Length: 296
Image (cartoon, rainbow, N blue to C red; front, top):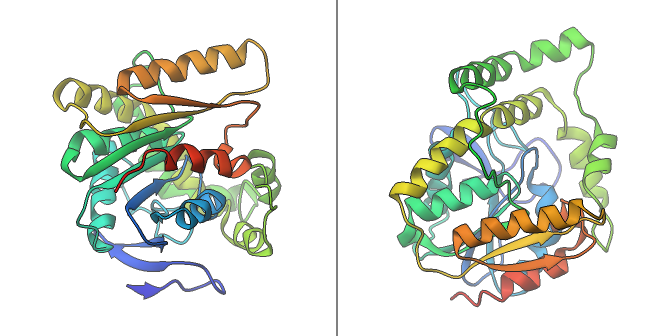
């Protein structure tokens, strides 16, 4: 492992996993917990929750997926896959020297990775937590898999050229991030704004965001196959629901998340009047729900 370079004072290290440098942040002491970020999220989006979990007695490990944060972008012709990310999760734990089962926690799209990890590596899973997960109740077939793969590869390979053609050095910019991610109770730090200003919306970020989103249907299909062949381990599990304020939508969203919890055999914690990025907006309540797993 080598210290992260290129920005003054980033937390964590750059470590080689699968021939690519990944930015890994490892903090706290106690039972290991692998914390997976949402689509388009980098390490700083999880800072409010990670700091509370570490203070509560967890060893919290998180990493930027390829193209996000400080991690290297995917290689030419590569695209995200569900099982590829599961392999990366296991490799990060190996590199960190984690030899005991870990709690695996995922926000939003990362719920697919977390569930798949539990099904592929039941012996390495101490607990499963989904935070406002991306649960599709019916198979996603809007775009054929071959088209999704082609689009993901093309966008990954041509993101820089697209930015040049559009005349922008990055998109989206920090103001978009501020609209999507609510501040934690203590507010964002100057470091948050500096990292977002330098890294958010660069061509590698844009390519990773669009490619991962394009592959959602293919990853969902892979997960559905795993559900038929790989049972979940008998470990504590939770679905944490960010219940929105809007009547009607709130009831639907809670119902959908409870359906997901039933599939996982998980307990449910509902955080009312919350936004989707509840990991930033209401980190204390999310941490309390995870602490209740009492792993280790």
